[in-house]
Image (tube, rainbow, N blue to C red; front, side, top):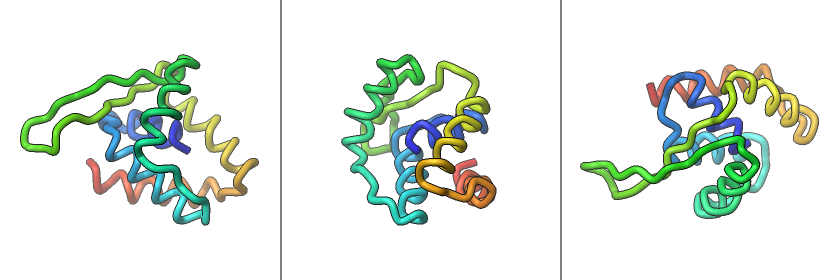
Length: 113
């Protein structure tokens, strides 16, 4: 779900900042009765595993007028391909309705763009 959230943002050319990614991930978990990991766990453990596998890259970014530093994620492959593959996995493992997921994702992304 974390990888899906990163790919979703990148497919829309929105910077996949850790706060945005976590918001999408947590909302997806809450909507499907899945207990979400903490933001720290995702960025420090899951993110590093995905980076080690070569699926994403992460860099620290510092922004003015914000709360300090954040991680900016990017995909190493085409985000649309990653979305397609992760949606198949979400459908099989968690029985998530992918069509409903796409509608929900568009609504959430409209807030960020």
